Image 1 (spheres, one colour):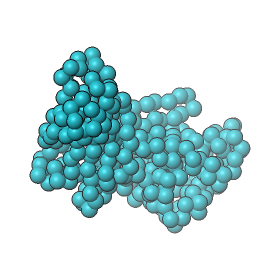
Image 2 (cartoon, one colour; image 1 turned 120 degrees about the horizontal axis):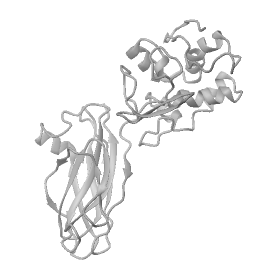
Image 3 (cartoon, one colour; image 1 turned 180 degrees about the horizontal axis):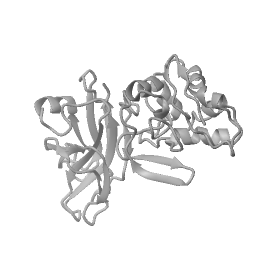
Length: 298
């Protein structure tokens, strides 16, 4: 049986962390109740816990799938539970969880950096979360409802997928310059380099990953449908060489196309980008770059 405690930074849930039954751990109700106090002492300037408390009314969703706690953990809570089961004190269990990317978010950000960024070490957007119980795991779940603020750090560009190899041996590479923001306060462009020279191409984007073969060639379509195309441009450079490039100022594109996919931008939105360009001798007569994913900032 657990006791409900209060804390200056919010209400502590019943059985916070629900670390284990009394048969497996000799932890007292007071130890469970002191979790938020200990966590807040370890991270006094972070608002990750406040974002949970203010959004759900309790602190349990920092580590649990349920707003009221119980034996259902996210990756962050599961890691701390494992540390305590290994005999660590509550303080050490919290601090020794810092180097992990418990929510497996695409930015690869550690728990510590998430906490320092006031985001959630146990949650990532979309149906990409794992629920842990003593009897197994369930994948493909959405994050807990009501949490305020961003779940993952924004503005961190992550590349994924594999670029196709063109007729001239080019492997187009994507990169972000700046970061997207809902307020438009920051510059943001997407650049594709190492493109076949003197070819028509464009950059397109969507909201999610989906890897599938691009015909019978070596490229892969890596952005989930529906997608939004930006205008076609010429890559420049020299035909037969890999010195072409494609780029688009996304702030200018969104300003000129206010009904484009994902507009108006909202903080926390996940965007995925990829480049497309012509390569007539290839099996599909076109090729694709690798892909890039980034979270919109406020």
